[in-house]
Length: 398
Image (tube, rainbow, N blue to C red; front, side, top):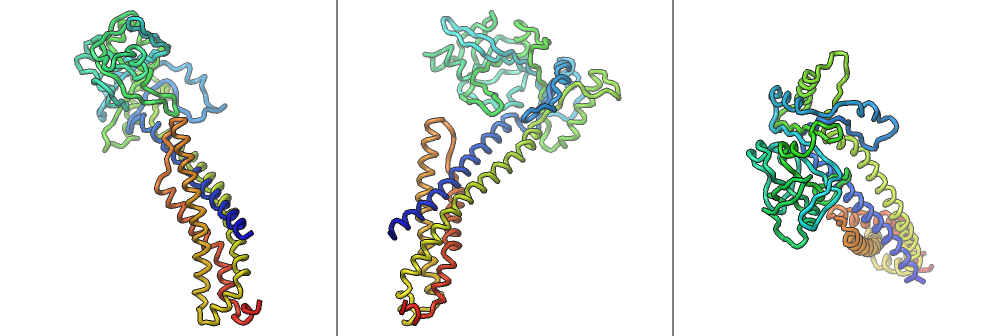
């Protein structure tokens, strides 16, 4: 019976620690995933776009107003080039969705083609597996070169480990591969270079109307790190309003987006996730704590005569107290260790099956150990205190 009670108490602690470690590992993964997705958008960058970024959408999002706005134009881009003093990099890009690429008998569908201006690699997070970005001369002259996403490269050149220097058919025209992006995967915004191809903006002019409303035009402005971001944003707004000849009483017909908008929106989500993790984890571990307290009361009752003998032989109160406290803490640590091991196994299985970067951090393991010790002390203190205050004569007689 004692072994069964001990096993059930350990099971409660194990479940509690397993729950809290697993939940916080999942919360850490989600937070890192969200932060990595935001970081891909760059830092200290303003995105001039038709649409305003909105996290979560909702009925209050005025999409009909943004729909009527014009796309960022090359005239806007030139106005910013000439008038914007505090800038480090200024780029213009046009995105064409759902295109098909060919190379001999191989083809890849639903590809996003991006026509980009010079220095676009300095305003976007681009990791290369092979090759390089476009040179300034290639961008200015509109040379027929391209950079392939990982999935595009694998689809067009399935048996070629190095497709550099090969030609592909792009919108009826030939383009030479000068680079291949590393496998990136998709982020929370659905952004990925895996099924994307970059070409110089002046080359994209040859096979598409870059002024079309159906093309996704974006101006990216990267400011110096030491520059006040709000001041740069105000300067950009002033130049664009002048370029578009907006009257003082007219509202902006463009959006100035930056990653801080999303980061701020996610802060409340991070806090909610943390609170949820704490609530579920603490509730679970308290269940195990009550089990430990119960078994410690039983242990004190069964060992009352032994306590009386120890005290009659001169054992101090603190010795009796520590004896049961240590036992309680050791039980919780044993249950906590089992919970950590199970959580470790579960995270490994989930990571391998679903390709998640789910891992237990040292902070979560340390938290689990700390909680195990804490719940051991809290659960065992009152039974241990009662044991330490027993009268030796009455204890021996019981």
